[in-house]
Image (cartoon, rainbow, N blue to C red; front, side):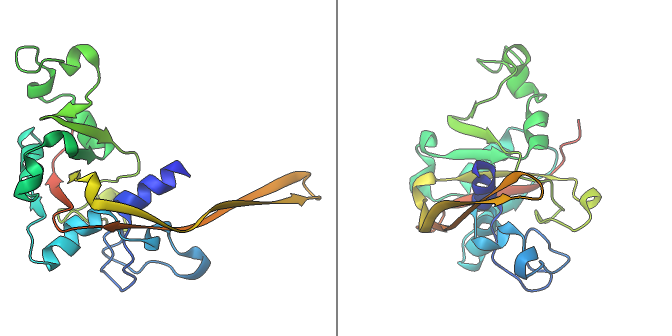
Length: 215
């Protein structure tokens, strides 16, 4: 359940038209009972890659070889009144970006970074903001969106968002139902809920994409 909610917040995109969903930019999401969970709501990456730009904001930028400056750039894309307090912002990325960051000189060298990752093995904070690694965030193409063929998604992404500008709304809280299966002597457990995430203001998130993360 926790992983599914994390995935919705990051990857959610309700677009069902062909070649428009950020999670399947070269296809059409399945419908009915086969519909992917990301269709439930719009999330952070949808806002940064699509919605923010449609509102006339610059909420995304293409990077290159990953450096710590990419995090500064992500922060700079937010509204001026937000970037002055980094403790209220949150960085997040896919696993590959996180692992690459552990090998960046700026954060592993004792002469540069106060808590070098080469000694501690961890990286919780960058430029005064918490940094979270997500197993629910995948590599993407050069536009920051995901292709159907996994091998074609080779580039990393960094997200930055202002949590106070995001709301989690329940239409129906989680409920559980159980049903015994006599044939297999097991009990089936089903959990259901209705939930959505919504940005409460403009400049709620940004993304840096097209990041080379090969070790």
